[in-house]
Structure formats: structure tokens, C-alpha cells
Length: 337
Image (cartoon, rainbow, N blue to C red; front, side, top):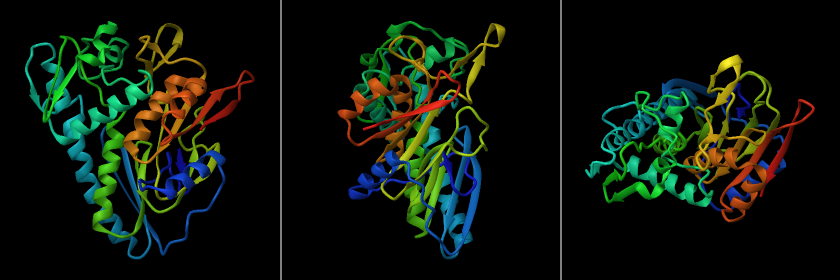
């Protein structure tokens, strides 16, 4: 996705009620709308959660607001990453995964519990198209997930019944299991960072955490062309008002190359253990929170439009847009609901 002000991936924020319904309608209509005029804009960028974070503030004293908001957002993102990163030995994810199968209950923090809760919600609602136990499968296919190459495509390691939890603690029942919050942690981080930013200034702002979006106010965003470079013009532009968050999933940035240059994208179908197929180039989800949008964008990429529409018919909090490969070499669009 792409924001109007030279964003490489677009976005905006969580609030509720009629604002979300209007946001969904605008999203599905893909109507263009200029961002509301402000008294000025200011931008802060930094690295977080293995990607780029970018906060744009507008309104009076935008520079001061952007600085304060970015500082608060950065601390919130760091707090989430410290609990959910598979690459930090002290994180809940790393400690629970390292103890898999030995029966030990591992203390975990609130960000870990929130990421797991959202992951299991979307796993159930999507019929298993999203699964927080994909780390061994990813590692087995060349995508490092903090396991040091000890990957496996054994479907038993993706059995969600093996995740055992109680208040403040978690364990995995089978040796070789490992958690991966890569499909939800950025969204959770964006939600908490946006909440922290709202608390320190009243300005409208747009927070982009690697293409997962939250903020305050109405912003113009666009759908990135998955066939082009990150700075290519968006395929479609639409208004994303207060009350919605958005996230996009695609295989155009993370992949491994095999013999003959064949590429395997990082998005796998947990139900089959195979790369996600079906001609989907990109899936975008709109939801009340960035964590929901983040997880659902992955699930919807795996499901594709037909199964995705069926899943979302039971989950009206979420809207979707798919970009699909066209036999002529172009693209076509599908949406839900």
C-alpha cells in the first residue's frame, strides 16, 4: 500500500463504529480522495521489528508532535519486539520454542499473549490458513526463523492443539515445535505504537510499520503494484479514514531462489506445507485493528478470493482486496465482502 505523501506502503488507524463501516465502503469502492489539509507535516523514520517504521504527523506544531509521537511509538514497538521476536533469545517466542516438548511452563508477557490470542483467533476463523506454528516449515524452506536451520515440514509440528497456555505462561507439547509471530507482531506493534502516539499529541498522524498501518485522521492511501518497484505509482488510490487499520501481504519482497532461478515466496499454506498458490499476487485487509489486518492479510493471501470471501462472510469486521495474476500478463482485482 502507499500513502499520498510519498509513502511506499500506506495506512491508517483503529477506531470503531460507523467510521469503520464508512472506511470499508470507501475501501471497496476504491475512490480517490485527497488527504485533509493540515497546517503542516513532519516525518520521522527509524528501524524497528526488522523493517522500516515511518510516522507522519500533520497539523499545528507538526515537527514537535512528530518528534514526541515517534519517540513514544518507538518505545512501544521495542516493547512488542522484545517479546515476540524469534531472533531474540530472551523473547517469549524464543524461550517457549526452545523449551518445546520438555513440559516446562515458560513465563510470557502481555504482548506475547496478545499476539498468540490474535493468531489463534485468525487461525480458527480462516480454517487454518493462518498458523503461528509455521516456523519449522519456513526454516525447512530456506527462510530463517531463529531455529538455526533445524526446520521440518512435519505437519504434526503445526498442530495448534500443541500450544498449551495458562495465564502468564505458555508451553509447546511436542519437541521441534516453534512459534512464529511474523504474521501478527507488526500489527500488534502498530496498534500499541499508535496508542502511545495518540497519548502524547492531538495531531493527526499516519504510522507505517513495514506496510502495516495505524494512526489518527483520514489519509489517502493506495494499493502497491506487486509487479513494480516499491516507489512505482499505486494501482488504486482510496481514502482510509479514522476507525480502520490496513495491512498487505505479498511474495514480491521475501523469497528464495532455487535451481534455474525459480523463486519460492515466503508465504506458505500451513494446511498443505506447500507455498501458497492460486495466482494471488497481493492481499490487503482492512480491519478495526492493525493486528487483525496483519494476520488476515496473510490468511487471505493463502485462501484467495473464493475461500477468502467465505471466511469473511463469517467475519464481517474485515474487508479485503486481492490483486491476481491475469493470463495476459496484467492484473485483475477481487474484493470482499
